[in-house]
Length: 333
Ligand code: PMV
Image 1 (tube, rainbow, N blue to C red):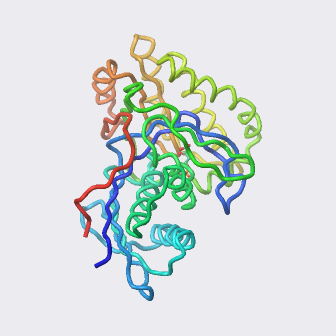
Image 2: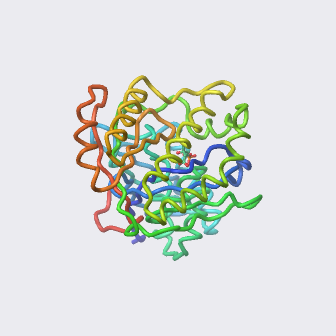
């Protein structure tokens, strides 16, 4: 019987955003990025190897709860990653894969980060291989999702730009250093119209792309320092600047990409009010309309109560910094 391995890998939320790919084949980013690994928003993936001649079988949990054979771009993305993992491992076998998310997919909660990190780790396990976290990070990145490179580690994680060579992510600080929370204001659960892959491709066409690149070395140093000092005021300033700049570049790309919705702006306006009233909270968005409210543990109950009161917010997910992926025994097949 082939080995069956199940991995739960968390999503992450970037404070310094990865936006723009220099080398699409090897997934080399233009700029370094730094994120907080989450704990509750996660992908669970089970993998086992099939006989050499068998085609890959890919199952995915549907929003209604049933497991179904994956199709279209989702299946293509998984098989593409499996192809790259096969080349790395020097094997030709097919795989049986089943996967589910604990949160809505494709809505700016980095399902590709958790999904491809879980896939890489489950397949590595199903092949009976052991790898360092650095190699796991490189293998997760081969999926095409750069943010997956950060989801193989817990706590606060940096993925260097790596010059012309792809690099592995590394932990900057462990999760216990600072118990930050991520209260996610879900405004829209439908999948985004333009993928982040396409967003990375268009980013360089924005007249503001180069201007942001010049700011990033300083911003990265300041975020590292704010995290080390647990200085929320300093952190929140840069986190919001970065979120706005990412969307500024998306909106000024040719052709433009709008991830924000009216509800996004409503939440952003309220966050400024709460902060002025003394709550330690700031906002950031990945490639989607939903708003991540980063806050301290002390501020979290107030943030949750306030955000639940906004009519445009459909649901609230409470998450926190977490310690990274883990293997579990409750398999999906
Ligand atoms: O990893 P990708 O290709 O899904 O791109 C992620 C891009 C952002 O989520 C917007 C930013 C980031 O660094 O996570």
